Image (cartoon, rainbow, N blue to C red):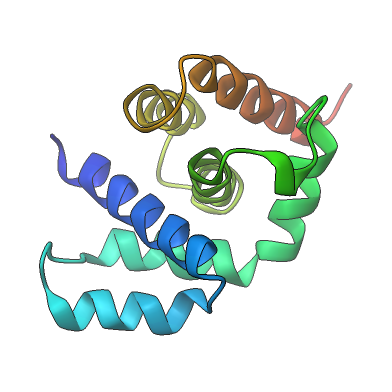
Length: 135
C-alpha cells in the first residue's frame, strides 16, 4: 500500500475512533502519534487536522449531498471516510480530485458495507460538481 493510501486509512481510523468514543479528535490524534503503532505520518496529521478545522463546512456539504440520509444516520465508517475525503478534495491542492475519490471508494469497499463504495462515490462526486463554477 502506498504511503498516502496508508495515511488516508490511518486518518479514517482516528476520525472513526473519535466519533465512536464521542470525544475530541485532536487529543486522540496526539495519543496515536505518541503510541507510534502504527506510525502516524505528516499526511495523516494534515488530513485529520484539516477535517477538524473545516468540520462544520464538511458536515454541511455531506448533509447537503447525502441523499436520503442524515449525517448521523450514515454508518460511522462512511462518515469518517467522507469527512477525510471532503477535506482532501476541497482543501488539499496537491492531490488530483480523481485520486481522492478513488481512494475514498477503495476505503469504503474495504472497511464498510457492500453499498458504501457507490454511496461514497456519489456523495463526493456531487460535492465536487457543486464546487465547479458554471459558465
